[in-house]
Image (cartoon, rainbow, N blue to C red; front, side, top):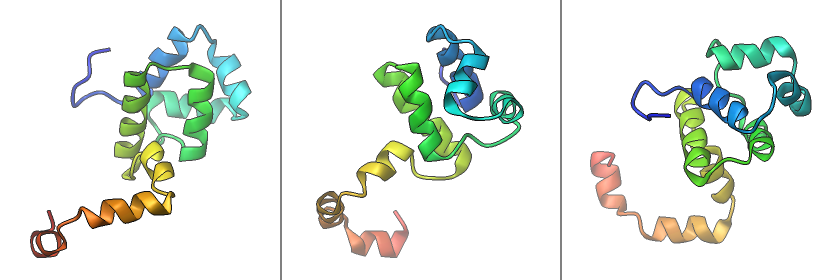
Amino acid sequence: MIVDNSTKFCLLLAQMIKEANLSNVKFYTALGIKKPYFYDILSGKVNPPPPERQFAMLRLLNPTKEQRELFFDLAAQERNEVPADIAQTLKNKDLRRKLRNSIDYEKLLKNGE
């Protein structure tokens, strides 16, 4: 898949399901979601699923590192959220402290950068 600004989560998901040699029925059944909701996701009619469902999807798909990162990034972009893998990692208190120690708060608060 060529990645550009027009790349959508739904297109990536369809490609990944195909590459995993799964039928659509087997995929949405294994996820425990209803057919109409699944096809709404695949058509892009609804936002990508919430993080818990994203993790479940990836467990079924066995993606490459690049696909996994793109999957999380596209889902986050379309949901207007932080990528699910990053959000999960940020639950680590020590990591949050370390990140905050590296933030230039004067610049952040002054310029929003």
